[in-house]
Structure formats: structure tokens, C-alpha cells
Image 1 (cartoon, one colour):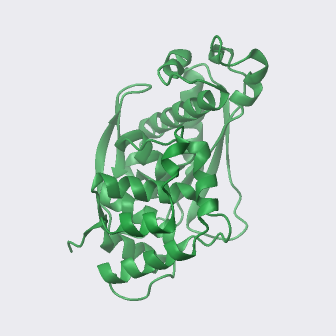
Image 2 (cartoon, rainbow, N blue to C red):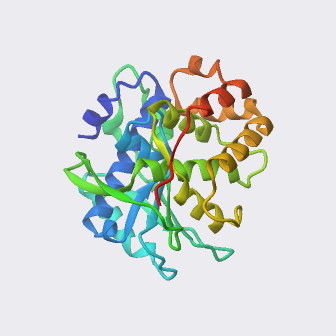
Length: 286
């Protein structure tokens, strides 16, 4: 079954096969969370949600969720057995462990890791037998925001694999707001995420509106904004400053491992992002 799913991605090398396998694992984990009633309390957001349900044309690594309401004592651990059992039902052995917090935060994290060599994943002419160790060694971070900034809306999205089920997801304007909060306010110094810039380009080219109200809630929650709902002009000023100060070399280098067509990055420059950002649309509905 897994080999058939992998075949649909038509991987041309080991890395593409690994990307496909990671996405399949993400979908199996979503199925387990659905069975356990997780989506009665939480919604899916982030790059992987955008990839699986909205057609983003790049791969993504992690599974990011937000509770629908603040619940500081939420325990992600109670869902771990459901995830392990779902994989086990498909003949896959995985482990999952919660990340121990050194500092108290509103993010509950766990790591899902493949445990066994999946010989079924040997694809003739693509993955050599000796490469299976590397293919099988996949780790997926699962994060849940237990005290989320509110002001977002959700919708039910259908997933067909490993069976048909619905996942509660952030709507596109709210996903866009979360992505732009990450792009503008990441505190990681030189660790620039080219994925943020790739996704921004995708949203703008699709004509998707950014929910300024939810963006403002997120910015207030992170301590990056202390006013009312940010205006379009104020947002554009922040974005122009970020475009002028980001290291475009780091931006390109980060995104390359998540896409197959590098040539589309040739146009990327501060001028390009200034120009394309002029096409950014906003949702300012109260």
C-alpha cells in the first residue's frame, strides 16, 4: 500500500522519495488524530496544512496545530497511543515522544519518528537497497499552541488517505496571517526561512487576502505589536523594512530543498519582492 502511494509522487531520486514518505506519514498522523477526536478541540495550520489541503507546491516538514480555545493544561501525550496504533495498523513501527520543556511556553511538542526499515519502499531503479536506512529515518515535529491568539476561522477539509476523513483547518486568510507573522517577526537571527518567502509569493499570486485582524492578534500575542488592529499602511511599512534587510542568499538556500524547480528562484531579489508585495490583498472585515 505504501509503495503504491509513493509511486503516485513519481520520485526521481532518494530525496524525492523521502519527501513523499514524509508527507504520507503526516497524513497517517492526521488520520490518527481524527480517530481520537483531536479535531474537536484543535485546528490544523502552517505550511503542511497549506501543502496537503490547499495545493502549495512545495514539501513541508512539521505538523502545526492550534487549540480552538485557550487550554494551558492540554496534554498532547494522550493522543500518542492513537498515532502509534494507526501506523501499526498499516504495518509500520514508529515511536513518538513529547519534547520536555525547559522553559514554560504555550507550545506543546512531540516528535514522531520512523523506527523500522520499510522494505516495501524499495522502488526499482530509484532507491538502492543500501539507501533504505536513510529513507526510513524520518522525524516529524508535532506542535500544538495551547494558548492561541484568536480571531481565526476554520473549515472542514477532506483527506482521502489512508481513508476518507475531515480535518479542521484554518481558512486561507488566517493561514496567510500566520505565515506573515512568522516572516516579519521570527527571532532566529541568521536562520532565515526561505519557506516563508516562497509561501508569501504563493498567497499573493493566488490573490488570497490576508486577515489583518488575526495577524494583529498574533503580533500582540508575541509582543511585536501593541496597538489596535494594524492598518494596511502600517503592515506594508513593516514588510518593506523586512524586504530591505533580509539576506536574500539565505532565503534562496533555505527553500531549495523543498522544491524541485530552482529556476523559479532566479527572479528573487529585493526589487522583486517589493514589486510583488504591491499585489498583496487584505481582509479587513471586523
